[in-house]
Image 1 (spheres, rainbow, N blue to C red):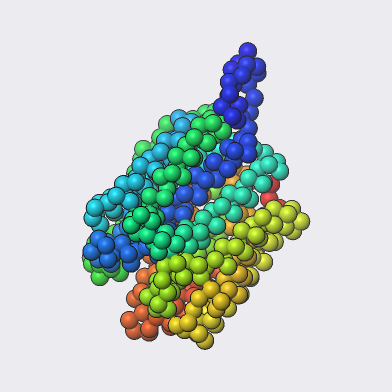
Image 2: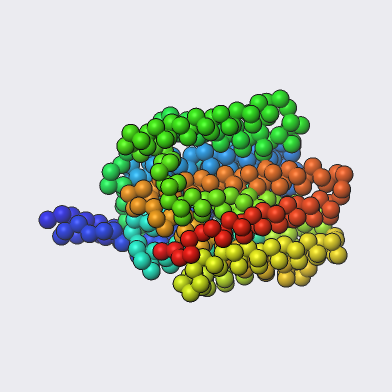
Length: 477
């Protein structure tokens, strides 16, 4: 007789049975997936207020965004491995608790550099929490239940990215109890408390049946590769591209090659490296990850650029700038709910269709900016935002399902960690590249033409996602 723990955390006798993720458990892990993404975007519309209140330079403000994104991306795969090793529920609870504490530290930061340090720690706590979401879904669901859960995960991720920016504008303008910009971080604390209670009750414990020790050399080399790429790209423009930025970028390729060599050697010896190269032998994993890069980079770059353009160029306040994206969020949510039925009928053909819709939406947004500048708002952006939201909803949830569809349950944490690392690194890369392009062009071209150039660049990224989507497997489990 073996004692097991049910999805509600109740101990029962009887033969060991696979853990099951119930409705409350799924809601709780999706909440854990939403929090880190909301916090990546929530600061976009709060940055002007933070800069004024803390007398922070533009370079330091970029660190408020980049510090979170880089530490998050660097530690995600390690977070997945630790969940496989020590238990995903345990890491989820610990990561969520740390996220609440670091959010409190951000909200109470007395100066800009304390805020940067707290944001770095907040990113690290997110990296402990988020990989456990996908790994838990993979380990506790199957068949239609897994398809539904993965669809909801993709919908949650996309909606969180848009809702974060809208929520940031509302909270800054509301100035709750005189907290101003601090409320964008303090709002996490009560949400985390609710999440911890629900997780302790409803999220089952899972771990890899054959956990491997942490891959020390792989962890160090992956961290070094991501740091040498993301730090100079996010800080280079504001710092004036000093010598260290170019040396760092030059070091990226040899470090990445060394990382691949170390991981391949470990894989051949039968160990489980931090990022197993054998996972990339799965066509669905490899092709799905490749598509995530331009999609996520374009999306995050667009969100940053539109936030700056609407506030600095069109003269909108934080609420109006956030609400201008409301049509995108509403349509995204509606189409995400319809996504599983469309995939069941049409397979992954919905992904290139989504890219066409998203590209059409970007063209309409560009036309609105060209004709109406600087009178942009909800009405002018509604047609383009709605089309773009529909297109994104037909891509992101499906691609997430494709990436993990063939990953064995024993490697769920590793696969989820790799996927979220690629997504997060791409989000940071998008802000760094598209954001830097926009800000560098603004003094010479003006805000409107710099915005049009950034939108044209994102349209090129959408075209790439369309071409890559044609190589996805026709069906997805």
